[in-house]
Image 1 (cartoon, rainbow, N blue to C red):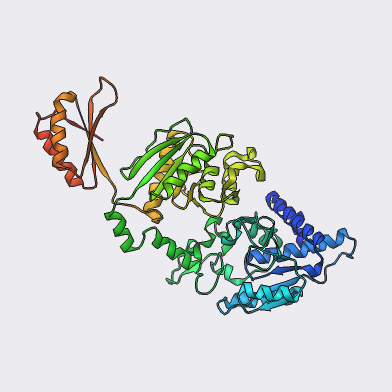
Image 2 (image 1 turned 135 degrees about the vertical axis):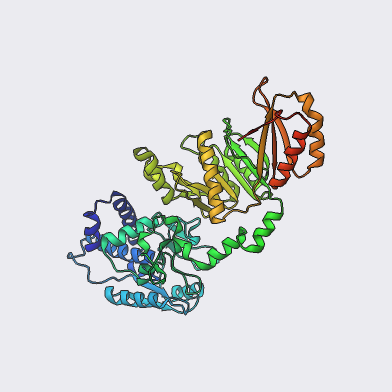
Length: 490
């Protein structure tokens, strides 16, 4: 069988593992159900294309084990379901029918909606299990296992998900290694195909053209698989508006007070630069999943943003991700893209599917990538999780988050604060009254003072959104004392 042969001859160990696991699931399903009791949902996309060829290989190997095959696979007897839609791309329809013809698929074409069409199909046929090309990260994958009964309210059948743990990279590694045909849209920059109303080429694959005509690289050249759905136009637009990247929303954020909290998990507090006047409170919680969940649940519903650090890692006390998952009412599930980052970072110490560090809150996680970070930041709706293990790393991650916010606008932002610091050898008594009056004169500024050591100079800080006000406050203070009493700190 050409698919099995191509994988066996490949040097891609990861792909071989994914292939073997998927084949096991397929053979297990074929052992549990007769060929009349199984069906395959095909939609012409890359995931179902992979599943088609896995099913061909799995069926062939299943028959070989039963010694019912003479070495060739001349037919594919698994019933194939295609939900035809007027909103489908013409290329998808053409590819689906061409594929059905090439491989002799028993195509059941359903033109009604998925649920009602499925109900009619199951009433007319003894189907008990349906193979689906669902992968973790898909909107419909939340809560699913490789074998998952259909959801309440749906006709009863077993959902079989052989490629549930496959990543975007795994899908394209299979397609290119096995040299199978795929829909032509993927060569035009489309990375995730929905309907003609909500799908556009992925802008990350755009290339410049001398004729000013926009062109795109093929889908398999997308370097960051987490961004495969960036071409889903409706989703992209709504998410941008939700975080305030539209003109009205941005103005609203800039003129109002945003509220954020910082949660430190564990006994070790990292004194980094995660400081901003929009942070309303910093709390420390113990290394306990329930404590983390309770605090996250409280903060995420009352704050615009919640920043959390500490408690991320392989130790038994690293419970932050589990706590966040519990706060949102979801489970932890393997994240293939995050696992790849970990493989590059800790190499042989990463143990594949048993690597608990690659378990992230399912269905709500977005990885925030920055070229300066070896491991991306983790965003679960309005909760940002830092993976730093020391103050230096935390400073770096915070700086990268600020850069991402400015360039991508995925977080609500206000007008940034500006500051200025002075130092002096004056005593606290000498400066107390002038500073109190200054606070009354400039109520929009935050004026504070401190010493780094008991005998060190007094440092006076001025913070606010208006640089002109800060300069006026500094000038007013300096006029009250002899020239040279204060020096600036840069």
